[in-house]
Image (cartoon, rainbow, N blue to C red; front, top):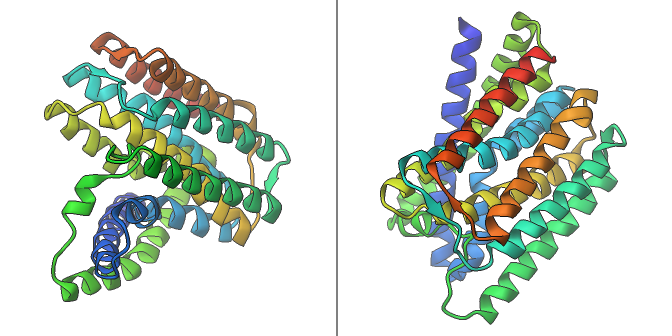
Length: 316
């Protein structure tokens, strides 16, 4: 029973602490007159990925490469199939946002690079530097294109977080402190719970990382897109998912591999990376042809996710 409490409690603590850290940091950055676009692309993007980063780092330090890399691969699969699929059941959405096509192509390109690096069996410091270099390129390119298209919002920036940051500096600093304390604690509880569950269920850590942990860390994105669908603003989900997937690979795995080598399980190389690439190509169809994500397609995507999770446990 304790292992489930550890996992759930750890995930909740990670999500709450990460949210508080982001909101506090936004207020601090605003006081320092940092432009909203830069805040969105750095503090918000990195901050909302903090739970995944903490889990990947903690797991890597404990020699649990399956959870470390499984969390990222599983999150990217979950983001496309579930985070986009479920809101479509509420209201069909059209991919009409500017810039999503080029961002999707970039997401697929870095997914291919990431998969190629994983074929080595270990993501080492060289792999980490390659991924971080691509992250710097992506951020620079996004800033340049956003400035070129003056007045147009950036699809990869969550404006709601920028608007909902606390106005009081003291509250903001308290948020930052709580976030910095809560993140490592939540990460520790999550890893302890998930690794114990894997041993108890008789499955690999990679399976737990790809499914249970990945779903848990994707809940904020899922909640955001569901609310957006209810408000008839579902189109923003495409940009949010693309941005999240890019940061998962480049920022999380880039930083983790640079700090400590991450072993890549054979099952991840043999099937999960291929499935991640397949879902990325599915995303390309929607963005290139501006296809409407209908309820029927949403149902198909959710069923594909259920099938993937089921297969992950069967083919352990």
